[in-house]
Image 1 (cartoon, rainbow, N blue to C red):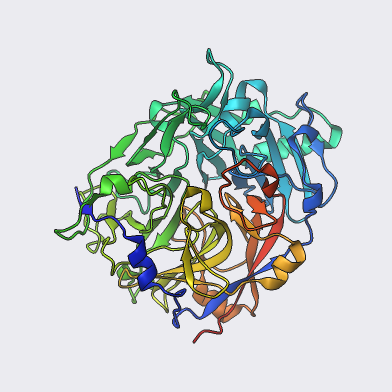
Image 2 (cartoon, rainbow, N blue to C red):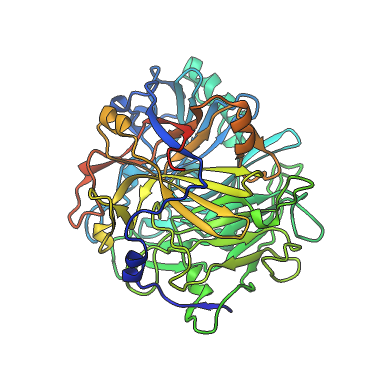
Length: 543
């Protein structure tokens, strides 16, 4: 087991007196208000018929939602299914109202970005609580004519136990996306009750009792398993039981691991195939003798971004390709009592032949950057937020655009780096940053210029926490990484005219003022958003 030293935040501020600049990053991003949504008329769950009948809402109305999961129709990708999540903003603390069942989303929404029409129907009673969870792990897999959304775990209300309380569900849910979307839309035309249960299958496994982690899909063509099969990886997270109010019976346990299992299928009887889960908890990684902070502790993370990546260090100039992997970015909370987020990324490689990131034979490899003061610190966008990945073979680099969320460090009005002092001062943010990983496995992170016109027109100050980024249709992508689309930056540069619309942010937590986690519950300061925000790629002025 590798060990690493803890972080002295004063040293971080000493090193980064001002936000970092990187002249090699030739682009930035700009936010633009998408006026096809009417945030002041966001759909509430109470507007969806309780009797199960499907309903169509007025044009330009979208649901107020955060911490949900989504999947697009394989034939009509502008149609997007939204599952679970929360309909209110920031939860409470201590004995304040926190994760109350009234704020759970038990509706299934279909948003159509082409027509700006939303249809919806309530989940059946038997599925309502286990499917309508928040902070679950999910991946969409479209293969051989099938299009499934796999949802694992998640946190939410349970009325079936002796004393009703919030729990982490041990479920894997398979949703037939195309059929369910079609059923809801067809039923909405006549206000009928759609067939929902027919297109949702579930199985239970205690290994799936996870919330706040992420899920990665690796197709058989890239898998390091023997024999090679389509594989899921459940990356970090926790098992939490209780209402998150600090009660004595609240319990939590971090997974401190990566779990893997073959992608399940439905048998001839429509049942989910048996699943064997493997815990990957022995990894080789780089370290130095003086380090004292264990990798085990570094995997005690939740509520973070785990993003698909290519490893620029493996780039082959002859083929123009690089090996796939994933980045575990930031997340909360460090176990040293500081209430601080993690500031180092973990590089996760899927290919056992990647000699730059050695690991156990036949298993994914993990490498973590040194914790010395000279190493990289992810200062911004430390919590789960909307994000975009762009790969450039020409630059031999991958760029991660992180959009809003929560930041532990921030640029003050004087243009110098400042730090949140505690959990209750950590601010929701309007910052957008670009985190670059180059072919030496080195990282830089730069802040994008503020989109002042956007914030002036929308009157919001923070956005993006637990939000969804929806890529624009027709942009060049690199298909080698099937966990999620990675945009091909080189082809965008050569074939598109700037500014280029990369896609749209939907939902998440937003606020009309800069606010941190309030010491007194102030629900009016944050809310679940129904807003659409367009994201544009523009040339950088920093050279």
